[in-house]
Length: 189
Image 1: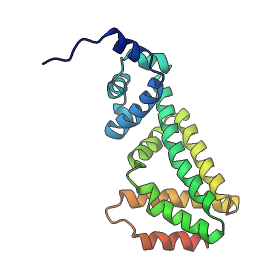
Image 2: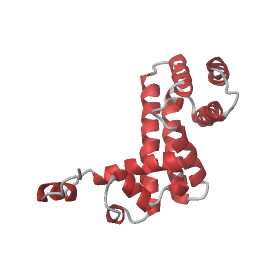
Image 3: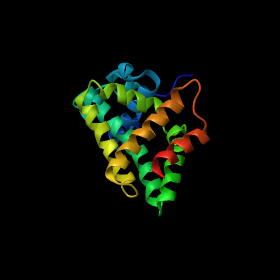
């Protein structure tokens, strides 16, 4: 049995789709996570969002624009968690605990797809627009850390966090949570 033909009501609903742009950005993240930046085409993103291909060019001037929007959304989500953890910390010791929790839990949890982060890093190495996304993200991380640490320590701690996260996620012999805690405490206490 085939689906009924679309009615005027369903066509009108699809045409008036105020959330389509957001769905396209979410679909771009989904496609990037599954196929990488190299597999993220206008066609694949439109298919994943279940919208006509023309919607891509209606909402975005280029593929580069949607990639920047998608990676900005990804980075903003992670930066928000970072901000929340460090804002909740009232003392330096609590800030150190927040960093430990970020590295051993939040940044490696399934909700924060590390594949997207790695894809962003690789793409940013060749694309100035995406490099700007990573720079803004790093600045937000440093700003959050500067609530508890001086600017030099915040910058270095941000690099330590990135390195610990990548090593934990990509190593065949990852550091244990205790080893991660030791590294963070050794540097920040």
